[in-house]
Image 1: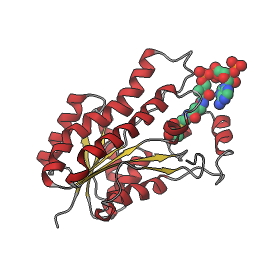
Image 2: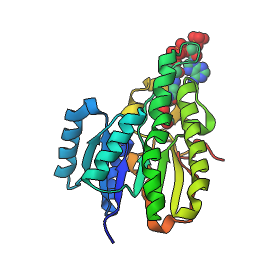
Image 3: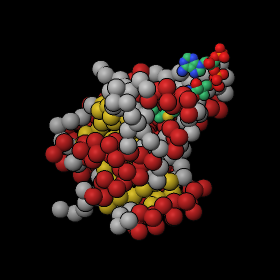
Image 4: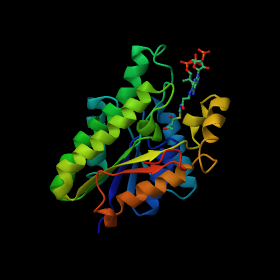
Length: 247
Ligand code: CAA
């Protein structure tokens, strides 16, 4: 069987990197998408992966824009081939209480975190249906399930992501394409490192496991959902949160 092609948006980020490494380990040909203005950083990242024995392709593209996503997907398809696996992992935070949140902070988070899922998936789904195989995994968040002080924008986007997963899962269920969400809790990455330390410590104190998660723990679940044998799992939301939220 030809190597499956996996596109990971936000692939050079904390969780994205671990996902790229996991899917490469599973034998996929992985493309990490990154923001065009971070070209230098992405090249350095790719070099670092290679130095550690992980071969990953990179592709620029602003996934918050429909046209940016289209150009990125087309470039991948021309240069590498049709996308079999899509992991929508691009995401940002702009934490503020609603009273202080600007329209820009709302729009930036919604367009990067939620619009991006539509923008990229829209351009790969037809091909997956035609080929009778596809895996879409959307990275949501525990805070999309339970809400979070200071995250009206982020929690809305992350909850919306799972609504998208469940809807698309129904549309493509008979086509060999599965669509699922993975909802990480607080994971050690630059995103959580940017939080005020005392706020982070207070949240970790509420995690039943008493610690933050690792990017690898999230990537393991993404890899599991992308496996051909996971074909009967669709429209699911799998939490990886140390017990912070149970449902
Ligand atoms: N619960 C209750 N009250 C709180 C509070 C909390 N968690 N945090 C702050 N407050 C209170 C403050 O003490 C303050 O009270 P007073 O007005 O009486 O002084 C009031 O709320 C307003 O606080 P601020 O003026 O500081 O509010 P702000 O708009 O500047 O924002 C914040 C504060 C930046 C949102 C801060 O609360 C924060 O960082 N919260 C954590 C948000 C968070 O969890 N982010 C996760 C990032 S990682 C991630 O998102 C990954 C993932 O998927 C899990």
